[in-house]
Image (cartoon, rainbow, N blue to C red; front, side):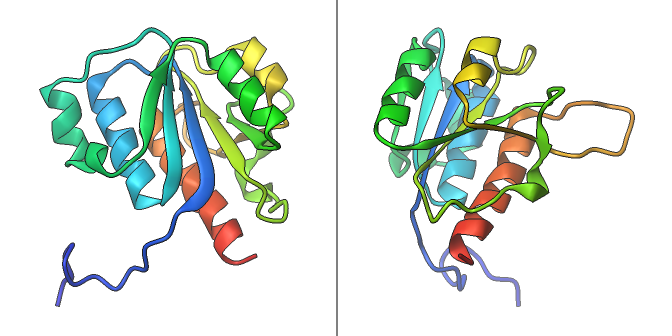
Length: 168
């Protein structure tokens, strides 16, 4: 029998993970990131960059998770990242660079609180935020495309991060 929201056997958990987006603007992606954050027990999500107005597409994609996921919008992601670093968070960027490491090599740093930085749909993460990151990881891909949707990439990264935390 297929399980649903009411009879699934998943244990609720909140992991010490904060997602910081840099200029993710599409309403469907915003809503889907809220839904993904809920699914992976993320502590908080911060939507960085020019404030956007949430609309029907956002709410449809989020499936009401905006009611249970702690989130906020900020214009200055650099300042936000610096504050988290000062508080002792490990900052991980998800981006393909000439120095990035495959995500499967991610190490668990004794359940250290983590900020996961994900970039905009078109331009990824700025050099300024990459420079603030403690580690930069990429998802290995085997087709001709060198990128994927921000929500898909975030989901894969959260799967890896939460598994490392859960099985530490």
